Amino acid sequence: EPEVTQTPSHQVTQMGQEVILRCVPISNHLYFYWYRQILGQKVEFLVSFYNNEISEKSEIFDDQFSVERPDGSNFTLKIRSTKLEDSAMYFCASTPVGAGDTIYFGEGSWLTVV
Amino acid sequence: QKEVEQNSGPLSVPEGAIASLNCTYSDRGSQSFFWYRQYSGKSPELIMSIYSNGDKEDGRFTAQLNKASQYVSLLIRDSQPSDSATYLCAVGFGSQNFVFGPGTRLSVLP
Image 1: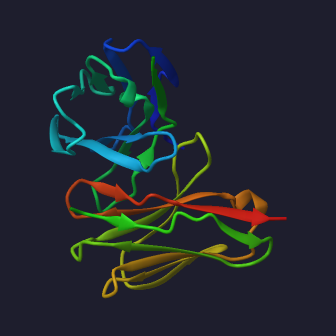
Image 2 (image 1 turned 60 degrees about the horizontal axis):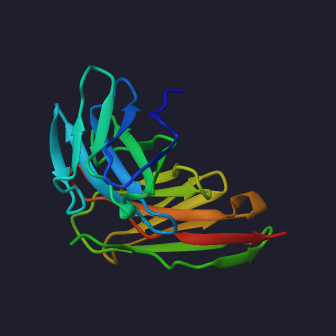
């Protein structure tokens, strides 16, 4: 069964460093998402991406964050100048169509900022 | 502000009992509704989706949707210890965004 894959599964970085989290969405899906889950808290929407541009973003997704689809398969989340409070599990997800369709999650990238 | 609310729990039920999980949402324009199960440290995995009023059954799981009351529920029949997890309600608000509730922690006691 096709799946969303994410790398790395776990990354530790020093405060102030830049981090890139990578995702390969399911191949025939059109919408891509990044969600964040701080330990013990709820899954929070960061950004959605369609047709090579951001379609919606939350107030969390400020200038510190950016997304890119550098080629036909990868979808990346860049976090510049990481802060301690950026420590969280970051989930990539994709859907064939959009909000009316099922969202499929990757296994997540656990980011620890020290 | 689009809100999805759930009781955080924990909800404890004995093995073999019915577990009932509830979710309310704020936006009457919501079109799609999902229940996910999340084990600690893992990603959410889809249990069921529901789009129209009424009940939808899949094995031991039944989702119920009432758009007039802005309410969606999940029933788990014959609960098993392996069902112990956090259950997330997610709502699609018509844009390309899904909003998740905080989750209800379910504990099924052997």
